[in-house]
Image 1 (spheres, rainbow, N blue to C red):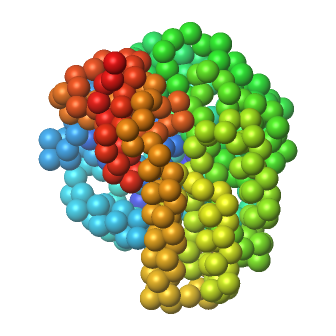
Image 2: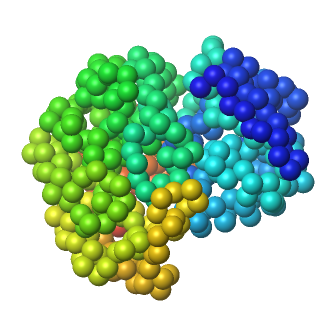
Length: 429
């Protein structure tokens, strides 16, 4: 993207951003204290880290609270209606401050933002120039590496697709360089993120399994977590991708957002796969790596959804046995195809959401029970607080250890307690 122009309208401050001079927008902040508030997905958090590097290169000091800051950057999300309302509350409260806004809401809902504040709008931070040219990689417990922006999908409900545009894969050698840089800076876990990680390379002719194989050649004590993958883009690379999860530097963890177990609803959503396709993907992954952890996402209350569609979703989850199920109640997003369709009333959505959540908890108990008392090889990936760290097994199971351990430490831990979404444990042996 060479230029991103926001047209002046109702007092909006016109911003013309060139990649080669992205940091020019911030020159008046040189030497000042800046807070960045980040909302939404891991990709947004990756954008924030690029912004931090740019601002630090300009002599800014990063602070955690707007109350401490001379200026505030808000990296927005608008994936569902509740998030949009939260963004507007945050921006309204900051309207008297020097304010910069970026992220998905800034790209597709500027008028809504302008109804509560008058910020400087920022395009996405560039992949070249200010964000890479000699900037030091900041140390983080968990590294974030973006694989590309946009996606090739046509989901009828998705506003993120409108904000981020078509798929643009970043070069494989750049991704590998950034993984290595994160590891050198001290990260033991590196998260690869994109709107659809399994679509990476479709537009550039590169291969995701080949990229992951090269991750196995990177020296160091670390693991990479591959981000969410649309089943439709997994299918063409299913066999080699299944093999890739045996890579020593890759967590055996696959996030496959299925959204519904009903083929009828999947067609209405514009998802280009069936429930049987999903079962085939999970079986292929587990055939090669029987202990792989599966996570998924479900949208409840999509327009046209009936009770039999909810039951189909419950049936699919019972076959998949995901260790994590993210459940979202459908909300209309402006500009999407599905926004014109009638969806179930909120009471019905809540009832269906609770039914799926009860089903999910039953699956978690089934999967978690055999782990209590077991010994696991773990990698320490995050500091929670002084004297307490978070560790991951090779299958991405999270264990809290009340020990002062270094990031990157490898040890055996015994699981002592189940907290549904993570465990407590203690060093063993």
